[in-house]
Structure formats: structure tokens, C-alpha cells
Amino acid sequence: MRVAVGNDHAGYPLQAPLIELIKSSGHQVVNFGTNNEDPVDYPGFAAKVARAVRDGQADLGVIICGTGIGSSIAANKVEGVYCALCSDPYSARMARRHNNANVIALGARVLGPDLATDILRAFLESQPSNEPRHARRRQQVQQIETGNELAQE
Ligand code: RB5
View 1: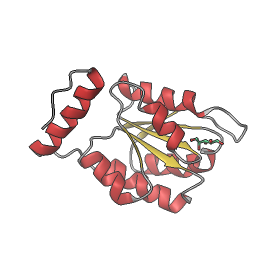
View 2 (view 1 turned 120 degrees about the vertical axis):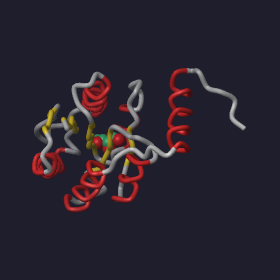
View 3 (view 1 turned 30 degrees about the vertical axis):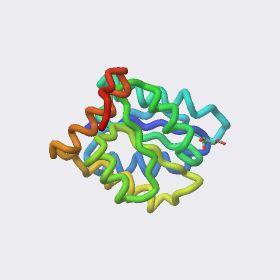
View 4 (view 1 turned 90 degrees about the vertical axis):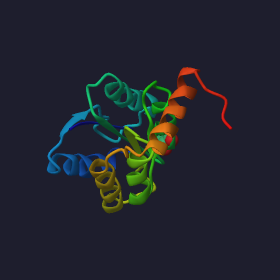
């Protein structure tokens, strides 16, 4: 897979360990930076990763900021991007299996490198479930996104 990575200054401390994990798992990295701890604004980096996934330049995306919150909000503004903010491996696994998340957000001021690596590994190794109920729910989310929302019971 090609995995897009982007972070702000607060996320930079996790950049190297997560890129190392992606590469050692046999995937390619598309790094959008930032590549140091000089302060920058997170939305632009999150958008670059999100657009790379939307446009097919990357299969999955990883965005890192201080909490992961701002980046996840920004990424989810891009149509076709489903970004999950995760702080544990179980949620990362479920984000892929149940929600078909294609971008993961991580908080470098929340997580140490070992836990962040475990979380990203779970995300990369998991596949979307093809069970009909999950596919139906994902479709309902897409309908909200495109304005074709059906009345829910
Ligand atoms: C930067 O100080 C911080 O606000 C940012 O990295 C992120 O946590 C925003 O959600």
C-alpha cells in the first residue's frame, strides 16, 4: 500500500517511528511533512493527506498533531475521507473493519511512540468487513455526506 503521512510540529515526534513502522511493514510512504518542530498550522497538512487519499495517490493516510483532534476534524471535511481519531489498537482495528476509515489521526501529546506504533499497526493490518450491516451503515454515512440521506427509522 501507499500510505500518506502528514503532521504539524506537535505531531513531529511521532513521524519517524510511524514512518519506520509503515516501511518495515512493506508499504510505501508519501510524506507531506512538516519535517521539524517549527510551529505550523495543522489544517493544511491534514488536507494534503486527505486529498492524497481522496485522489488515489495514497491508499490510506496517517495524520498526527498534538491531540489528533484538529487534524481529524480538518481531514473529515474532504469528501470521501473517513478519518478516525484513535487512542488504542482496538478502536483502530474497528475503524477499519466497521467504519472503513481510510485515514487515522493520532495525538503525539497523548500517545507515546510504542502505543502509537501498536495503534497504527492494528489500523494497517485490518480490512473492512464485508458483512451487510456494516456496508449498509457505511452507505448511510456516505448518504449524509452527499445529501442523499434517506429517512432513518
Ligand atoms: C498545536 O499546538 C495543537 O493545537 C495541534 O497540534 C493539535 O493538537 C490541534 O488539534
